[in-house]
Length: 319
Image (cartoon, rainbow, N blue to C red; front, side, top):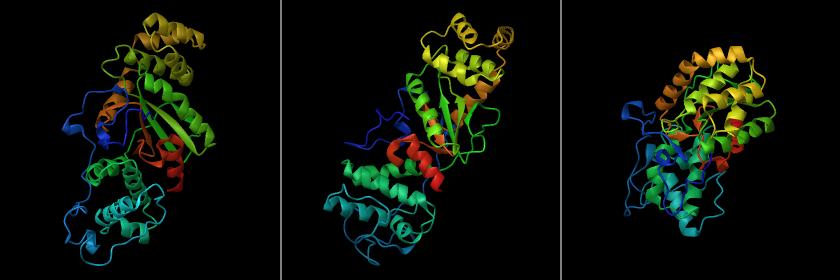
């Protein structure tokens, strides 16, 4: 996923507002997929004398000694004051796995909770980039939400790679979106790199501002009926500024489709129901722009696992 518009410094951006260049209208509150994060304890940067954190874990100023180890977290970029803030935060913020203890406790005693490790590394990286503790705390809820697996319908959708692969990468994309065009070969290359351990599924998310995106999507569904979705996918992206009906028909001819069958399917808009179903599902997932990539249901963002699709797939394989 392109992260050029999403930056940590000087201030951290709320994840839901950090969308690629091709953006959709904001989803209504009724369709938001966000869920509240576990209850927060007092700000660790507040005055001394803070109360106990999750399940009795101590914060700075009282209770049991603060945990000052963070197994598996790279703190090499932090200054000493930043390390102090880091440990205050992980001792006061709750486990990312919904357990009744802090992130620090989770790192020390709950090796099964990979999300606590991921969130703690996010905190360290954000501090190293100059973010304030208050900004980081504000962004923990959307970060946890990104790590929450979603159920995504992939039945009957175009698939690239090993159908039985343990990792499923789903991309919601728009054929007129330049960022989607740039991301498309990156995703396929990642699937090839993991040699049968990951697969890619394409979902349609044509944006209202792209007047030919929906027609192009319907054309790729017609091509999918003849087993040539990816060929049509590629040629449409290559020519995304020329997507009138005559152009689309020329591309169908070029990739060797049976034109009588294609013309019948395209003119009847046989693929429209599938395209609209994908778009509706994307809205329920609170997608704000394209491309939107999910790895085993988790919303890929530039803050975790190196911000790369290979990093996200590698994490999924370790779970």
